[in-house]
Image (cartoon, one colour):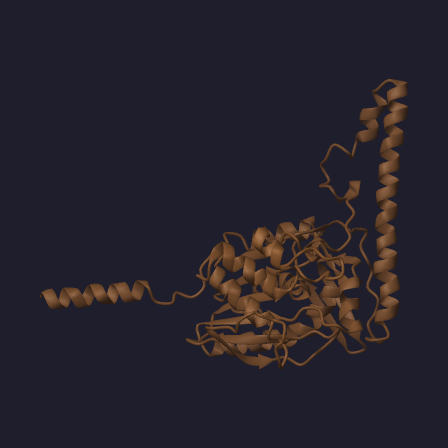
Length: 365
């Protein structure tokens, strides 16, 4: 009887400590594995990259390079329980940079005509006020077909848990991909019992406030994280302008002129002048961004994607971060190894900088 009890409790212990798949909450071990994947998106690893190789995952698929030099890889956990969709960031080629600079906003639900025979229908949010980055929407348009194909293929093989991850531009694309998959699932185009967890690393801001609200809502309770090195400038982009019309419809600025009308003439004259200047200047700034980061960049992008139809841009440039923030504050030791240098603008943005800080603050567990 005593031997049976010992065996029983050993089985319970082993079961409770077995791999349980994805769980909510930031998991440094999971994130560090994705950083290792980011640094191995190519066939070879850069000689200066000190990021170690993934320990628990094997690469089983590399997509073709599509669209604006976009690519993704599929990694499978050695016990075949979890797969990782790892999206490549910017590469040093003009089309890849044009994708970033094509930063006018478009509605978070709509369609893009990629060529004469292909229209990409998308939904990234439910709120009609939500807007997203047009360049990265094009990136998802070209990446989505193979990603969905591989998700269905792995699901048929018994894999029901996926990590979506990307660094830099890849992180921006990971935001939109997670949203896209959520709404495809809502429409019944993907199985509803798939679990997704998202790590957006060193990512720029993907859309406006209402997109961010939607993203944070659909990934609530610890299923999506944005990791930021506080010395990295990339998460501060794109350029952003908040106008009065970017606020919720019920706000104190809607009827500001009625409020000012009740003031004394001198006060009314002064405050009306201030309000009108602020309104005109922010509106002018937003229009300038649409012109230079919309139509002007589209003219260059047409040389790469000649059949891409220019979409109608929204009147918005109020970019916001999304996801639960994991902020990595550089300490004295980090700054000694990675000092600020105007000639090294990528020093704080590279995967290894993120790897080292994450390991320092969270360990590898």
